[in-house]
Length: 169
Ligand SMILES: [Zn+2]
Ligand SMILES: [Zn+2]
Image 1 (cartoon, rainbow, N blue to C red):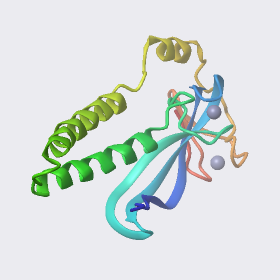
Image 2 (cartoon, protein in one colour):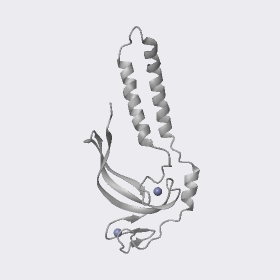
Image 3 (cartoon, rainbow, N blue to C red):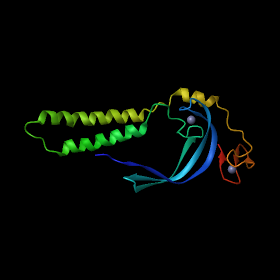
């Protein structure tokens, strides 16, 4: 069975920008914060509202700036979901007389794989290397909004655009 699921981002709005280090681009980049109303969908049917959420996005590559190249968490989450469903199924289906050894192997192996997958997901490399790279990035010092060209209102260390509302972080 193919499970089609994902998250809809309704009414996305740019709320902030900052100088950042993008692990995907492998260099210092500008990133922007997007706020949207997120809803989980299953087979394109919006089911579970997650509320307003904010996330940073690299303006050069459009990805999450702190997720290194090569990791695809969405794939790991999908794999975990399949394992959980399979794990429930192998424990729900009664053992049969001729295949019981295989069925017990499945009953043990599927949860073990699920745990390994969960550990893999939770161990997102956020090592000191990223912190060091971020420390080397100078904070944004723009006096003009990079998106609409309006002069920023500067209050103490923060600046905000009176026209589109973005905040210099
Ligand atoms: Zn990037
Ligand atoms: Zn602006």
